[in-house]
Image (cartoon, rainbow, N blue to C red; front, side, top):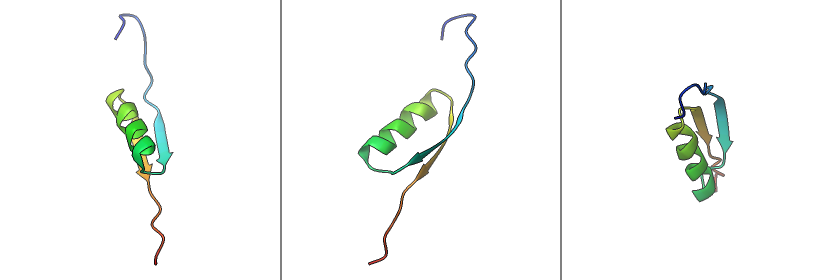
Length: 44
């Protein structure tokens, strides 16, 4: 991180736990953000 830069932690919800949603959630978590990952399961 660059000295003097202030980074805010953002609470984020990612809708969809497919490959893109999971990747986005991991990247945001690694950057220090609070992430909640949601997935919908349809009952058969």
